[in-house]
Length: 243
Image (cartoon, rainbow, N blue to C red; front, side):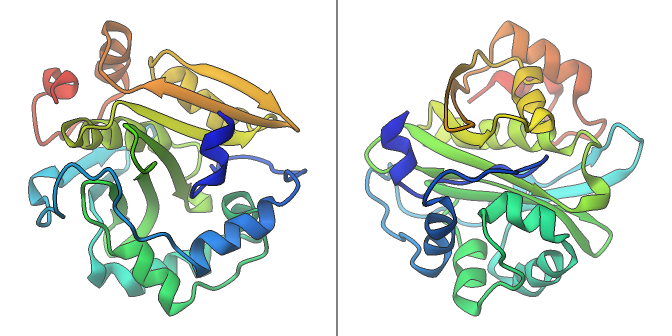
């Protein structure tokens, strides 16, 4: 897992973060201020906006939300979303105090190719309430995955929905595994991965848990998907395993 930590490491943000690893704060800020925009290992050119991936979802509390791929014109919504986050949520995401996004950061985060870099947003009406994304590690079939959910929607089952939908978007693009890092005491985020049904390989160093798992649908992950999935899907739930 050590090689994954040097490229675009994305910190997962649903829970407490009391002790960042040495150098994590600098790395997190550098990822935004000096983003790597290369597409080494890309299987194809950027895709057009995948409107077919838009869908409505339902939280575990019965709230209907809308999920769709991110677009460049979501820039202001992303800025507003970031401003509404608590300092704790921001710290858990970036391992640093980062109250505002710069114009360069916003452009990087909202402009993706839908192949090597992909992001979903979730909206409650006109309000952006969650973002999930993956970034391919160059010249590999692995991608780093991360989520950020606004404070009042945390623990509503949104993280696991983002994970499943990101996996379904990634598979046709030649991505076979997701990797992630989170704090060892981040029970909520670790629970998302455990509940996904994907077989996890984990290691821990300096209170940081590193995870890697294949995203091909398994009987277990498909059963979990059927049990916890949305009520409003763009395809039949049985297509969760298709790629």
